[in-house]
Length: 142
Image (cartoon, rainbow, N blue to C red; front, side, top):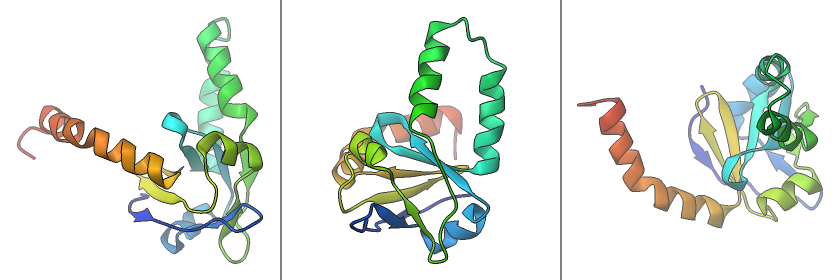
């Protein structure tokens, strides 16, 4: 399970240190791709491969499915963290997400998301009330 919030910096080559607690799960390979709300989605290679298999079996006659696949797979970057635990955020993914130097890396149960800091702050502030409302709806009394 991935959890927590971290604030690494990108170096001049677009490399980012994965938080130490995430490195073991990602050492076998990972995929970085376009996420929702202009974040980046980072999944283990095995998890991404399982998702790709589901996508392969989905109806390709649905125009929305074809468009989704194009958006997801076009920028997908397969990687193995280097010995120092760094991954490279490609120029295309940096442009998509607005990443320059600073980043926010969050664990989201089965994946990692990478956000531009101001985008993360705006998103999390906007979602605070929804978080409270959904919790009571999904997990009454928790």
